[in-house]
Image (cartoon, rainbow, N blue to C red; front, side):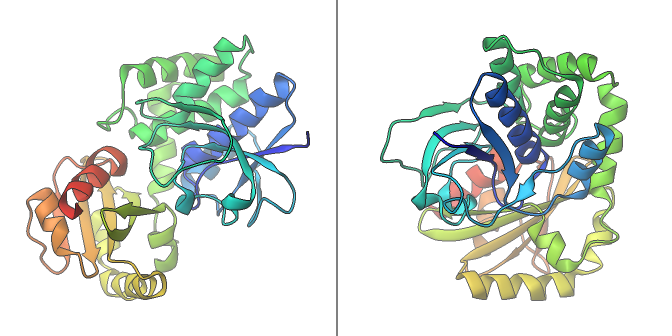
Length: 308
């Protein structure tokens, strides 16, 4: 059996990158040849974590079947979020914390999905289950993933398991999770150098919701006005994406990491469904979503109901 590639979703976030690195590390330590790879560019927040813990980013791949027959998915399962030739390789494992949709295999596999806030929380358990010591650098990456996905424990997706794992990992990594976490989130929230294209693709995921094809992108910021100042250019670029992909709806969720609220910018034929989903009125294609910070737990379920 050759090398297995381990990767997360397209437009990778910190959990996707760090969990791929960590799980490849664990697999290699238990005798399975594995390599972490990525399906997109590293964002500023993730780069901060990699630099802080002196780790290299996984190499970028566009296709998998040209170099392996077997892959492991972390932090996702939906095929439209995965590598473009996912149908040409065997998925041997999935480690995830999202809904299960648009996923099927021809062979049995190891599938582990838990209702926690972060894939890294599951991996922390798996190191223990396999009696493998987590090294300082890997602990730091797993901690970074939990901080990212939970918005420093403020997201409704965050569970006590995530908090406990984060504090365990922080001790191993030798950092104060609150201090390190805020610095990391602020690094990711600096959007001043981002192009409009980057803003709408850095953390974007495509979903099949009901009969609708929907893309939901999310950016974190400490100043929503910094993003809305570029609204005209952002809308023009989103409309290009809608046309190119045949989307029914594109929602850009601009999340204020200090206030824990988001502004939704919605475009497409089904934009009115955002009003129904959140009981808001779109003005100039935007609406404030009070207390909404999680795409997984707050945005996707609400839109699923509205579009079904």
